[in-house]
Length: 68
Image (tube, rainbow, N blue to C red; front, side):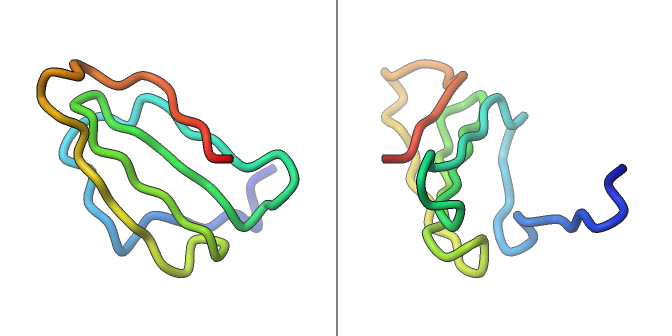
């Protein structure tokens, strides 16, 4: 198990613990994760490139994310 796994988040740095990760139901190239402190990273090309946004401080901690 896991012999063909590879790290998908190398070009990004999470500033806190990753709390949730999700994949698009119909497009496996789209993935997303969120950190405890509201840092959101997503990819739409199978983790080749990543985008990042920080949730506003008043949003509080992040625990789950979805990509549609």
